[in-house]
Each structure stands twice: as structure tokens, then as C-alpha cells.
Length: 233
Ligand code: AMP
Image (tube, rainbow, N blue to C red; front, side, top):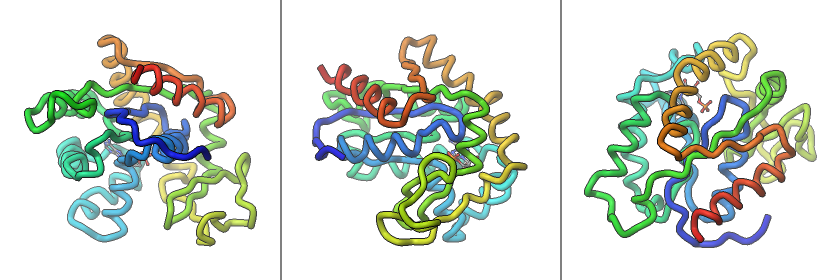
């Protein structure tokens, strides 16, 4: 991976159904532009693992593949974005996922707390990864991730060098609880019913850029980097 650059890229929103490659692409943007990935799914899973109040409220909802309430998720995001490492930009992965969350994010970015002269105050650049339905199913059922560094592998397309072990830190890879076949259907349904309208909202306001997520992963990354570079120039 090329060395990172500390140029400001402002807020980036990655939209797309589960398995579209948001996590993988977020990590690549993070490595290149040295801005944090703010994954609401990862934050919620962390809270579930830690047994926090938020985690306890979210656990059963997540296990059913449904969406956690807007209030809980927005408050979690507000706290995360107020941390100093988000000052030069951040990648929102898995948020906003409902029309209410998208409206909330616009209002937050309008808030006086954000310095008007900085790109992080700009409207987010919104990239949607479009992937064929059958491809999504293969990606989700084959997904394995490292519990320590979050690196993502796939038993169909992207195997680690050693069976079931992370290349980076040697941890045993895990299958996410909600990547089980019976939970995938409700997750995809939640995407169609609640998140697809978010993409429509950004499209109407001229902020949506669609990328063909069926292409090889490096090609998708190349196109995303170009979108981010074009915005800076
Ligand atoms: P993900 O890792 O993004 O697929 O998210 C895993 C699960 O966390 C989802 O199926 C939801 O239950 C929950 N979740 C993640 N992000 C959100 C969000 N923005 N709003 C509501 N629920 C969310």
C-alpha cells in the first residue's frame, strides 16, 4: 500500500448494502489519507462485546439483522466525531442508514461547533458501492474478520496466507454473528427499505457518486481515490 498523505479530505460517506465492500475500502482510504474509519457497525459490536448500556440495548436488534434506533446511533456518532482525530476528515461506514440519520448528519455538519473554514465542515462526499445481489451473498457468507485489527478476508475470494489466521497479527479469524444466512435476508431487507432512500436523498441533492463495486477490489479503490482527489482539486 502506498504511503499515506495528510491532505484534508473532509467527511466521506460510504453507502452500500452489507457486503458491498465498505469496510475494505474504508481501510484503504484510512491508510492513504490518514483519517479514521467511523464504522457504526464496529462501534456497536465493540459496545456489545464490552457489555455497555448501549451494547445491551443494541445486541438483540443486531442479532435479528434490524437497525438500532436512530437516537442511540446518532448519539454514538456525535461522540465519535467530536474526537480530535476526526478534525481533518473521517470515513463514515454504515452511517447514515436511515433518512432521519441523514438529516441529523446534515444538521450536525451545519452546527457552529464546526469551523466553517475547514473542509470537515463541508458537505460529505457520498460514494455508493453497487454490487450484484448474488455476489453480495457470497461476500457476506464467506466473510471472516480479524477481531483485533478488523482486517477482512473472504473464504471464496480473499484467503489469508494461513488458514483462518490474520496475516497481520496472527489472530484467529471470526465470522460475525450477523453474517449467518438467516440474518442476511433481514439485513438486505433493511437496506432496501431504509437505506436505499438515503441514497435517493443524496442523489436529489446532487451529492451521490455511484461506483461499480463488482469490479476487482483494487479498481474500486482506484476510482474512489480519484473521486477524493478530484474533490480536492
Ligand atoms: P454493519 O457492520 O455496518 O453491517 O452493521 C451491523 C449491524 O449494526 C446492522 O445490521 C445494524 O443492526 C447495526 N447498525 C450499524 N450501523 C447502523 C446504523 N447507522 N443505524 C442503525 N443500525 C446500525
